[in-house]
Amino acid sequence: MHSSDILPLLGVNPQSIRGSRTGVFVGEAPSEAGVAWTDNVEDITGHEMVGCVLSMIAHRLSYCFDFRGEY
Image 1 (cartoon, rainbow, N blue to C red):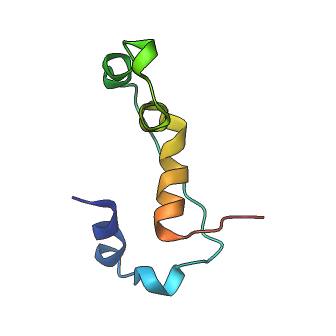
Image 2: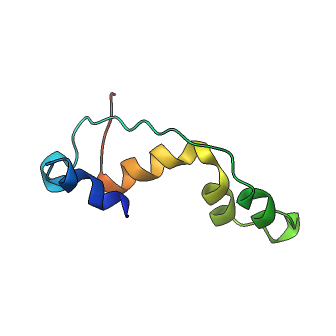
């Protein structure tokens, strides 16, 4: 299931809340993938770091749906 499938299942049209002050809260669990992807420090790019940092999950979802949160 993709993140864009969740909102319609809840009866929410994603276009109707685009740009809204919607907050995103995500529960996450540690993963060993980050260790494998960043094993060779010389080959690390920004993509690996953003993909491995669990705190970025909510930010990436907010960006994808254009949620603005509380500001």
